[in-house]
Amino acid sequence: MKRHLNTLYVSTEGAWISKEGENIVVSANKKTLGRMPIHMIGSLVCIGRMMVSPPLMGFCAQKGVSIVYLTDNGRFLARVEGPVSGNVLLRHAQYRRSDEGPEQIVQHIVAAKIHNQRNVLRRALRDHRDKLHNTPLIDDAVRHLGRLIEQAKHCDDVDSLRGFEGDAARQYFGVFAQLLHTTDALVFTGRSRRPPLDPVNAVLSFVYTLLTHDCRSALEAVGLDPAVGFLHRLRPGRPSLALDLVEEFRAPIADRLTLSLCNRRQLNAKHFTHYDNGAVTLTDAGRKTVITAWQEKKKQTLTHAFLDDTIHIGTLWHIQSMLLARTLRGDLDAYVPYLYK
Image (tube, rainbow, N blue to C red; front, side, top):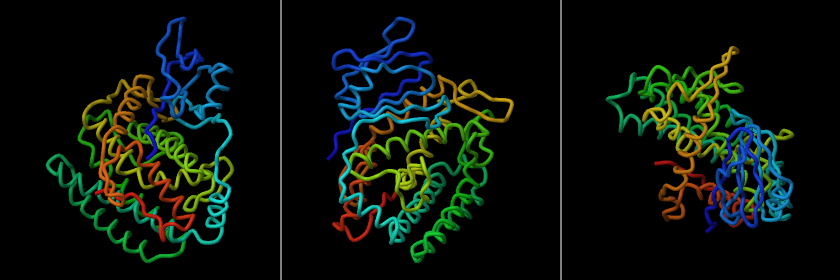
């Protein structure tokens, strides 16, 4: 089992990140803000404007620690890493499957994503029915998602499966606002991206970025190429396979974390910046709140049904990456996605 390494997030404006012995040191205004041994780090994520020293860049590349640069609102900018240790035979099998026969993998990813969306809604109805605004609307969405799962299970056309996924997203996000029992400041007006147009979308987009980074790192760790996927079409600069893997975890991990942060009042109006063009982003304090919650979330445990074992959430994407690699090598008859109960 892969050891669960930490991700070091730095969001302090103007920070200087350098190497000191075997440690990563973060400083600002001539004060040391923190240090961490590099052997405890899986990756370094820089959010906003800051500088990384050349010696640290080289040291990270040597130790297999990737450096990722994100904008203030969490949009991906660049990634710096050392030599990639991909297995050429595994990647050849991945490329061949992407070109010739991805239907079964896509079917399982889409069915699992819809299943997980449906179960997030069902759990909300079970645990918080008295706090929800329009339970009949959520009940209708649950039934519609159930029908889409059955259609996806019996479909072997990739374009049709993409259509089912899109329909499911409309149903799911059409009732997502009903799951929020919080102040008027944290509104959700429907899924919006680039830019997010309300506070809840700002949190969703930021958490999805953190999740995508972790999934990409997990795929590379098992030797797969994160750029060549099955559900998401190939596009220069797009980590298509990482986005495929993310789909299983959006609703049960990222969306539930977002709902928890909002419904428990851990985020409020002061954690967001509103711009004249309608865009909404997290403030520095807001990002730190979300990152802290994300790191704590990854320490939580769950039971993996296929492995029949208790695991940390932070190792979930590594396990699913290994299962996908085993499927492509022919060790498994079919990819077994993560199903949220």
